[in-house]
Length: 617
Image 1 (cartoon, rainbow, N blue to C red):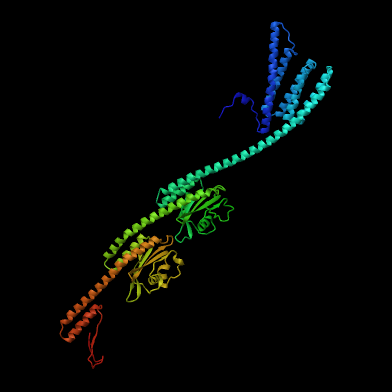
Image 2 (cartoon, helix red, strand yellow; image 1 turned 60 degrees about the vertical axis):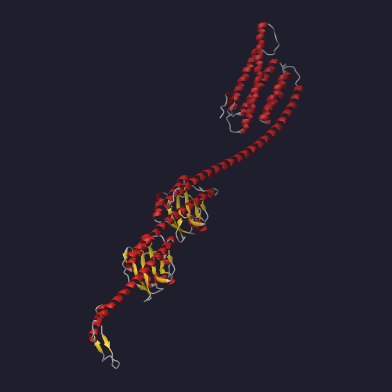
């Protein structure tokens, strides 16, 4: 910035009125300009006086040196006072003081010379009229016009000179001055109005430029912050870490009061808080705060309509949900989190200021939300693929453990226990189909770590196991209380428990039905996902082969044991050649095989009845 000179500082006018400053500049220029000839006259008279003293010559200068010096000193003093008044912004007092003093000087010179210096005095007498009419208007120039038309003619008359010519000439010139001044003032006023209009337009344009610049700067800053949020979100594939770091960064970078991430449940009916900032956010997460999709809340509205929603003033917004844990909220914005066309949840941000979220800001913030949604989706896919790989890696181990068991019941116990552990279930049951009796039998089961006694049987279509066996299709139940097809048997085993979700898959090999496998989760747990359902189907398919092989092996063993027993009994019978001894041995062997039961053998002759038959016990 250029430093002002002493001359500029001296002529500074302390006022905020542009017109006063402009008129003050003009008056300063006029006063300083008029000071120059008096200064020149004073020095010229001083030089003449010096020459007269040195050469003894005499020059007719009209006024003695003392009068000129006194007049100059007087003029200089008045000039300094007027410049000071102008500096203070007191323009009219300076104007009248200066021109009144000028008229007094003219009057003094006129009296001193007896009207001999009329022509130059006549010209100077018109100057106050012109100056006051130009700077103050017609009314301010009247005293000076009276001085020129009355006082000067009186002095001339007293000096014996004609004043009529002076009066007529002065009157014509004064009228011309007034006419010119009025026209000039009118033009000046028009120019000032035009200048003011131009200045107003310039100020308006500058204000708009400043507003646009501020808006662009704000958007640039928001874009920078959004990029930082996106960079932080891309830095981790751990979903919990990603959500925690981004919500904290959003609140800190933008200076918001609170920020929360809501994700939809598996039914897509509830928006559940998965991450939230501060101690209040910790409380919201602990109590699993949720809002229904489509509810009377900004979160519910944005989730239902898949569009952002802003409450500029939460006190007047009809959709705002007032959370007692966040009493300082004054404005709120909710942005949908959409990735690949799927709504994952919403981002809820709140501010302590009214109207903190401008409409033009939503575009940038929605870009941030879209990037966040994409990162959340990637993290979920990464976690699901990792978990799927871990689960699939368990399949060979489970099949091997089942094969190592001594019987089918032991193999099924291994199956349900490992399913409960891997899929974080609270209950699991395995039901086996018995073709000979047309029943489903509970072969293995656990609920909350306790084993369920085996032996319960169901008909096809009875309860959840029977319905699944009959449909031969995987059934996933997210809310067991709403599932309206429970049977009496299923009610006694499942519904009375605190079951929230269930998943059931059929056990079959090719077209041969083997049974069903059912897992359950209690209230407070998440429903089973599609990935978990796919894993359980894969496990059921692999286990069905083991189960079928185990059934065939057990059946082969039973047949072998039966054949061995028959051979043993036949060998003992062949040792007895007498019929009665043979029949006694046969009755004893069959009784031992049947659990030490009494066996009677009756032989009938063709012509005998049962009463006359030979009996061996």
